[in-house]
Length: 262
Length: 271
Ligand SMILES: Nc1ncnc2c1ncn2[C@@H]1O[C@H](COP(=O)(O)OP(=O)(O)O)[C@@H](O)[C@H]1O
Ligand SMILES: [Mg+2]
Image (cartoon, rainbow over all chains, first blue to last red; front, side, top):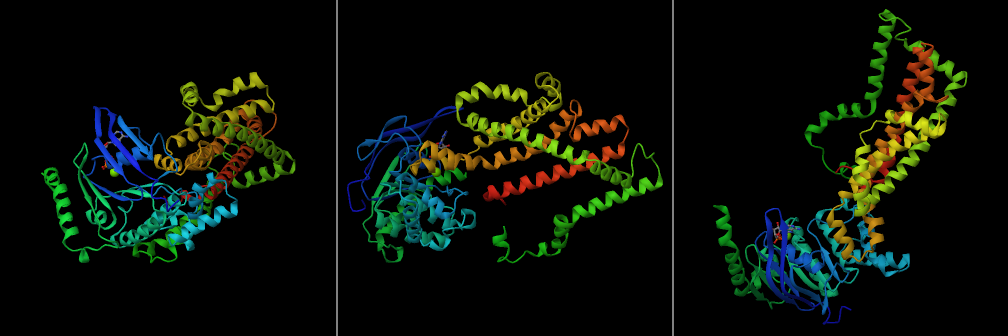
């Protein structure tokens, strides 16, 4: 599955998402047209409240768009499925299962023998460097470890698309850097199409093939950068390109921050 | 909790607090009992109140021995505990079952919740006359009163636990391909389990309360009946003995249920 370059194409056609609120209808995501090509890594960046999570929730099948359509490999997205994996910022591990139990959760539907299920789950934990912690409960793990379990749990079911909503936002800088290389490793092995929401410009530039910048709420796509620098990237050896893009994106995000501050 | 406490250095404030907290957790109950017993003894020795009104510790002790030796106490304990257990089992299982349903199925919720909420404020004692008319003075009316009381509490807590299942868990489960049934059994029920157990613990306490209420006014055996009988003979020593037994019984069962709950919902500790 991981060698097929043609699965995991996400097409977002003129999607608008509105919510009914007490003050009437509000637009959470303005008209958006976007294609995520199979196996690409897209970072989505934009001001808080511009609709990044809303767009993710629509791709995940949690939210139905008010207008437009979403499809995965030509099939309309009508609800959640294991084709689209999601990694949440608030680690959504089940606290009543061990790390291993959490990873096994997604494997249940495959109807494997118990031994094989455990073997696969252990292999997935091994991939994220957590074999030694398989029998611990989430409460006994650090934030970074929890997110690694979440990554293992999601990848083990072989999703075509992986949505990550500020997955490392709650981690300290050091842990975040090690999570980046871990994610790159796992992703290059499994090759899902990734959509990665972040508010950290550097994170976006270090990880993604495509960086998409969104406007203030109600959000829409205002800028697209295609990055071709080889990975692993670092600002120190990237040449001027990444630094220029970084300044530009910060500029796009900044003026509004000044407005909010006053 | 135990995992972290061994490796992490203790903050300075905790050092002087340690002996105090150790006292509070281990020895304090005994000290408290000894204190109250001491006051009780002094009051009895000073003969401030007549013995028939306020019995001394030793007469309560002898009343206990007497009831134990003539066989009423073991029998009453057996009968009352049996009634409480059966009533509790019926009420708790119905309560959990219906709570899971009203929590998840909109139509059941619409049909039943307003009615059940109306029943909740009715005290168990108020049901005893109805229970006696319906089920007579035998076991049936006891089971009814106890299971009814337990049912309402357990239902209410289960229902509420179901409302607070975090949306992220459901989303995670669905995007991992879980079927509705598996989501229900391995995500929703565990997520609601802490609330369900809180309801069960309350239910255990209420089982005793409502059982004694039922036994006081329509029974021919059991601890509640024996209390009522002691009133007729003005045997306050027996009353005190029965009350103390009830207290010890209730506290012990509550402790056991609490510990079982801690084992079963182990992930809730320290959150
Ligand atoms: N279920 C919902 N109901 C009502 N409003 C919502 C809902 N989900 C999101 N919103 C609103 O939509 C806007 C965009 O939210 P979100 O997508 O979470 O922003 P972001 O992730 O970019 O910070 C916000 O104003 C938010 O309050
Ligand atoms: Mg968000």
